[in-house]
Image 1 (cartoon, helix red, strand yellow):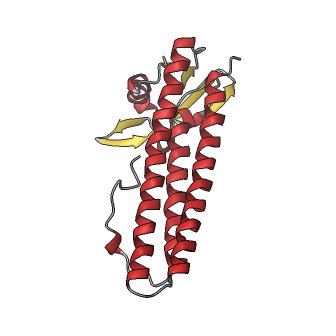
Image 2 (spheres, rainbow, N blue to C red):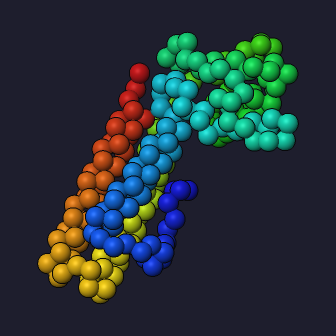
Image 3 (cartoon, rainbow, N blue to C red):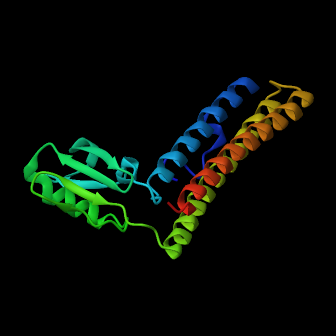
Length: 202
């Protein structure tokens, strides 16, 4: 988890109502979910997908640059990604970046185009990738729980400052729990789908 801080100080925000706390929690939980989807897109399956190269950076004149800013990426067939550099002089650098990205890929180029065959995954590799997916998921689950904890702290402060009643305090805690459960269910579903993709044998 890169985007969601593991700890935040509840006093950093001065919320005036439960609605404010809910809206803030919702926004943060949305970010956690989109970060999860982005990270999982970089975990390879047996099928070629340009998102597999999302996290690959090439050293373009001293700046680490995402491949999609240096080349056109295509999937001409289910087990092949083609990478067409806009600046052909960078072809070796781009090829080296793909090779070094620890994705188990072996690109080759003909001077103009890089071909990246997607090899079939071994059973052992599939299991490793499923573990990686679960590890990514756990990080994001922790982030969602941290947001729940922060939100509950904000609600307690509203009660302490006499901005809400004890009944509203109880209802608000229930709402935050429901919100968290909803996001954890979405996370679990995304993980299940990704796991299925990884384990699917073409």
